Length: 137
Image 1 (tube, one colour):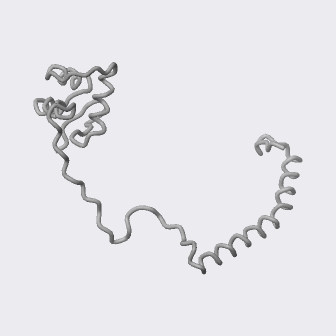
Image 2 (cartoon, rainbow, N blue to C red):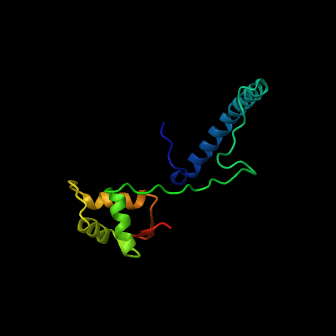
Image 3 (cartoon, rainbow, N blue to C red):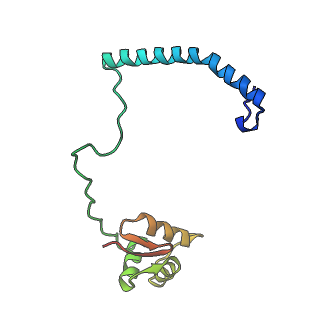
């Protein structure tokens, strides 16, 4: 039987729901106790370790950002780096135009998307605000 939202039930139906849940409570408590006992047995055997939070260990070292690799000559990234060296920041449309003017050739039907992905994913570039990028220094 699909459960209706409690807010839409009448007072009589709410009372029936409370009684139904109270009847199910002892069975659920018994099941919880059994599961707790099984967990305790597994922990005693050493098979299960308690769940820990992921992330940095207390007192651990912070991850240091590595130096960026130079863009390969002739690549889209190197063309974008050269375009951004000439300008402080570029919009996506300006970056596409600058790369094409620099002589970068692409057969892509959606070159603007390719340039946008290169600007957002490559570690040489930093997003200033929506649609504007600059060199990451």
